[in-house]
Length: 88
Image (cartoon, rainbow, N blue to C red):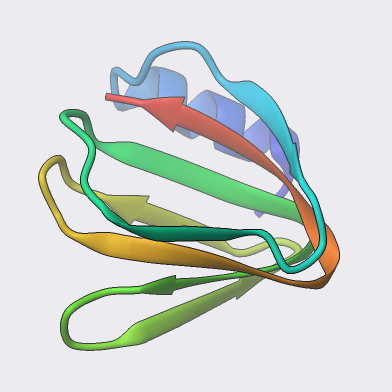
């Protein structure tokens, strides 16, 4: 998916503002939850999201969505990651 299509889909699905994020190489977010749903589009680099039952790795062009209150951890690849994110 490209950036324009992601922004349009998020708008149609009732998500909030889309923001650009840059995370450093090998950045790690330990297991946590959010009180909101979240969706991302990876623009460059790689990020893996570890859930209770699986690991999802997202690369440029990939999208990922997570409902509120789902435990997960995030691991950025060795080149860092640049992504769009929004909340619902």
